[in-house]
Image 1: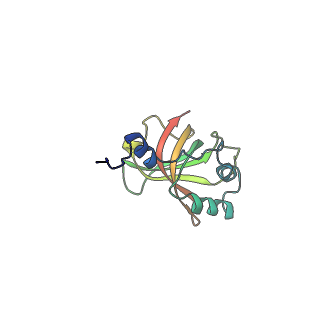
Image 2: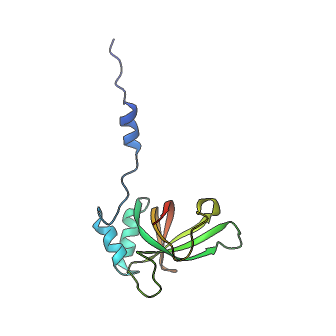
Image 3: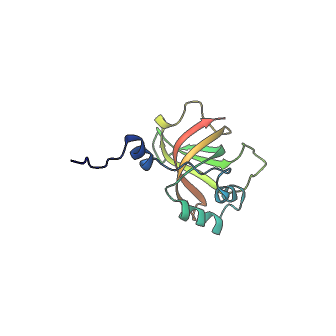
Length: 140
């Protein structure tokens, strides 16, 4: 009697593994998004094409505020590149919206430079904010 074919654990887990995050090194589209205009077709096309995908890039925190009337949830505004009050690196502004304080490092704040990994959600044309779901944030 012949045994039915099975998938090994390693093969099965690699089939379910998420693709490598897009970075400026491996994605011309992400590089164009981060250095291009803050709104318009480039931004909207990226949001539509890569919705649900992971992206990873160097960013800075431009603003942090409590979300609505909550005392333990935050909205965090991010921009591409190192923090500056005078220089714009281009690209859209990004937002982590309604983030639980348990997911925000205690030492993080406005002006910090971070490396983020996030899931692409959507571009909010009204607020001109690119919505992301945070996956990992590292101080750099």
